Amino acid sequence: MRIALIASPFISVPPKKYGGTELFISELASGLTQLGVDVVVYANGESKVNAEVRWLYEKDEWPLDCELYSSLKDLNHTSWAVNDCCREADVIHLNNAPGLAFSRLHGQRWVYTIHHPHLPALSSFYAEFPNVEFVSISEFQKKKEEMKRVRTIHHGIDLSQYRLQMKKIGYLSFLGRIAPVKGVHNAIEIAKRSGVPLKIAGEVQPMFREYFETRIKPHIDGKFIEYVGEADLEIKNELLGNSLAMLFPIEWNEPFGLVMVEAMATGTPVIAFPGGAVEEIVRDGINGWVCAGVEEAAERVRQAEGLRPAAIRAYAQQHFSVERMVQDYLALYRGMYDEVSVVEDLTMGSQAAA
Image 1 (cartoon, rainbow, N blue to C red):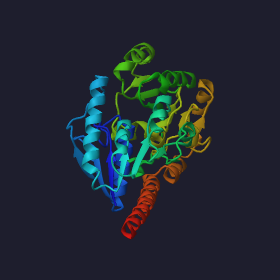
Image 2: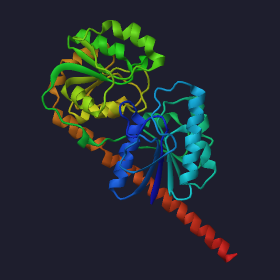
Image 3: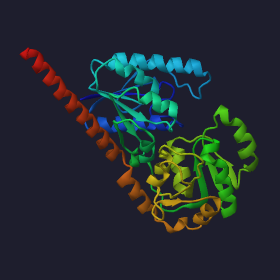
């Protein structure tokens, strides 16, 4: 079986720093390859995933400068990728919305993973393609959609890339986009109320520069509140693994929240606000807590040392491993392949009889 995984061309697979979707594609491609599945990844030329990579655009381009130009570039990349793989791939797995438009052109074995938050315009677009197998990344996300062919497969990560840290240092961590919906300002307030220092890592995108300058930067003193910039895998291991807890005080419905699993992989509990998939990932008193607000979160910080790092990692291994995720997708692919093969055999038999 040959699987084509189509990413957008803007961020390499795996990502050097920011890129949750690209990390997912990398983990899935590597896991499938290790099981002997023939995989080709359509990304950009800087991608170094453990699978065959084909590309039209060589370099990363993030953050995006021009929305119109970027949309055209994404369309060009995706149409080229679909044209290249349609004759040889048994399943075409899309991860960018423009690709759905090409699912009308070739065959019936199409998968689309929904990485974006629920938007009515996107849902209306999805509804135009009933031949596609849609995959939601949380049950919360699935309940927001009305397509008949949609199932939930939680993300998974390769836990061997994350070091279990048994002894923690007395600081809190935040890792994610520096954006209002991610609640960085809430993380700062939790740190102040708990009296525990905070280290912040993440990308400051141009559209949120004012938010960073006015609501985050004034609190940064390099001691109690520290901003360490963007984080690659090594920095993630150090930042998350050594922290007493990772804060995830969001103000929106998070589609999944892969960083929560990354923290758990290092044995670090997550103190989060509810929203979207959070309550599917965080279990109170096991791998963290879901808190109603800043005050409760500050109280939970004082209890974080009571959770055992090894048990937190074991929970992540059981529920959010790359092995589990890969097996779930492989079952989907095989089911589609078998279903379409039966239809094709019946069609050919009818034609022969005629």
